[in-house]
Length: 217
Ligand SMILES: [Zn+2]
Image (cartoon, rainbow, N blue to C red; front, side, top):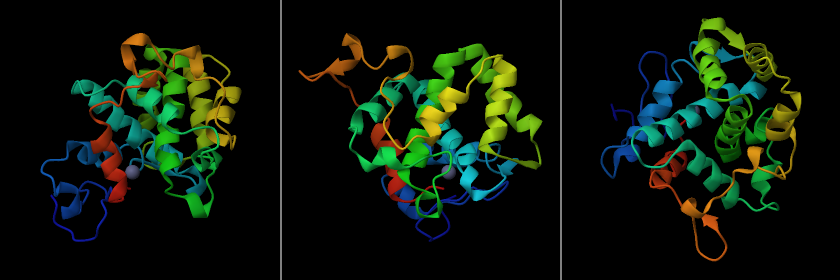
C-alpha cells in the first residue's frame, strides 16, 4: 500500500512499502512488480556484498520488462533495444559497471537498465528454455542465503552448459558500450521509426522510467 511518506519504495521482506508519490498518477503496477520480484531476487537470495547489487536490481528491472511484455506494452526485446539505443557510446551511462558499480554508483540507473540489458544478452545467448530455467532455479539454489555475481555466472554456465565469461565481462564489467547487441538484433523495420532507425519507445517505458525518478529500490 502507498502508506509510507518516504519518497521511495523498498522491498522489505514479505511486505514492500511504497511512497504515495509513486501513485500520484493512479495505478502503477510496474513498481509493484519490481518490489515483488525482489521477494525472490534480493530477499530470498540476498547479495553477498554490496558490489553484487546487480543480482537484486538487474532482475527486478527485468521483471518489469517481462510484465510489460505480458501486458502487451512492449516486449523485453523492444525495451532492450530502446535502452541500448537511448545511450550513445559517450554517455556516462556506459562507464558504470553493474557487476561492481562502487559505492558512488550503488543505485545508479545503469545498475538497473544496463543490468537488465545484461539479462537480455544472456537470454539471447542461451535461449529461452535455459534462461527461464535459470530464473526459476536460482532463487531455489541460494534460498535463505547470499550470492554474488560470480555465483550467478557459475550457476548460469552450469545450467546452460555454455561458457559465459566473455558475455558477463562485456555486459557487467567493461566501462564501455558493447559494440554489438548480442545476436545483432538491435533493430528491424517493424520496430523502428524515423530516418535514423531509432527503435520505437515501448508504451511501458515511461512507467518503468518513472519508477526510477521516485527511487524504487
Ligand atoms: Zn529494486
